[in-house]
Amino acid sequence: MTDLTELTAVQLLDGYRKGEFSPVDATRAALERAERIQPEVNAFVRLTADEALAQAGESAGRWRRGAPAGLLDGVPVTVKDILLMRGGPTLKGSKTISDQGHWDEDAPSVARLREHGAVFLGKTTTPEFGWKGVTDSPLSGVTRNPVDPTRTAGGSSGGAAAAVALGAGPLALGTDGGGSVRIPAAFCGVFGLKPTYGRVPLYPASAFGTLAHVGPMTRDAADAALLLDVIGMPDSRDWSALASAPGSFVTALSSGVHGLRVAYSPSFGGQVAVRPAVASAVRRAVERLAGLGAYVEETDPDFTDPVDAFHTLWFTGAARVTQHLGPHQRELLDPGLREICAAGARRSALDYLAAVDVRMELGRRMGRFHDSYDLLVTPTLPITAFEAGTEVPKASGHRRWTGWTPFTYPFNLTQQPAASVPVGADGDGLPVGLQIVAARHRDDLVLRAAHALYAAGVTEVASPSRRIIHNERSGASPS
Image (tube, rainbow, N blue to C red; front, side, top):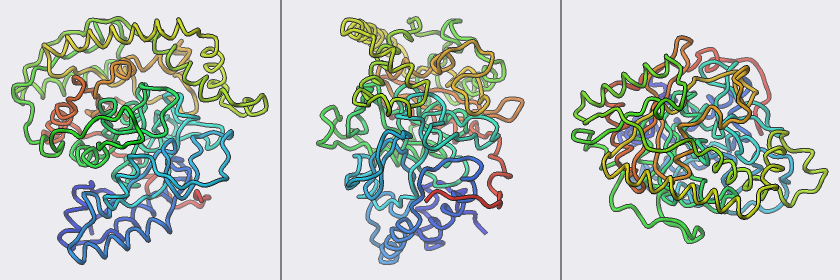
């Protein structure tokens, strides 16, 4: 029998169309998987089983009538608990947010999914306010890696990545302010796309400003293109939202990489120490791109690490989001978040504007770089997943999560589209990610290249832990 939790959204839709199975079958399978993995992986803060099955039943009726509501009718999806989803609280991993009140509004991306008939399984875990590159919080605890639960899933969209990897819904909405879609995608062996800023509208606006993107987390690039076709539509609540894309991202996938100019930067000109297993897996995938007809040149973008500017923008954003809290509430915060909020509060307006200057110069440099190259390819991360429950690897010497994510946050500063593609595993079976970056507004090129790697079979990685998937031990499921 077909294991419905192993199918992509595209495959589920094909099955619905042919009458091989129904949205109710797929939703029930995804919910059962979510309940099984939850005690060990902790991917969810809330499962909405009754609502999901009701939505799936309505979808099944539409498919029987031959009248699906939209592009994703009946497909199970999850939503990171940073984004509003009506009917329940959005607590953002924080004990400082009350679950009382009226929760009657969807974020733009969630609203688009609802319009297209998607089935909402529940909300996935996040660190407090999405502040760091791993997923643990005072509210919901530690989220663990689907391949090895002693390791981190990454973050801040760690719950979303773990859910997709383990079959608890093929589609997930994540957010990315410094790598928060790409980091967990790389650690968990799934696909994650940070679209061009504004391609997916965001409301309410993030305290981290125009660093924050909403993006798809999926089993492959084809599913991400389909999801982006749905959520990448304007919304009047976001003043910075882009106009509709000129064409379908799904349609663009078939163009391949033949003739594309690809710059391969293995270490940003020696600025980043990359583990040998990561470097080897990424290089093999880059060689495959060349074999598929891309013109590949090993070269580096012309910039130095912009981490100080990023910290100024990130820390001040954190200070702003917690500005209203009193002393008692501040004691409830993640200690690391308290630290960066204090650091952000000490930054001046002139410090902030100086960081904006660095950002604009970086954007100019990357704009010129893409005059010569269609794509930039790097490792997503220089390492594979480390021990769960820590912000940085032990004995690494890093103080903050930005110390081990030098390939991701620069492209939040520049607002460029960037994706992580799983391209292998290290000696411990932990996934390795390759990052593909394009000029602003060229999300289609990122998706084309990623899809070409999937089609060429480059993206096979170690399977998620069967022990987790088949874990039958009792444990409290999220309510």
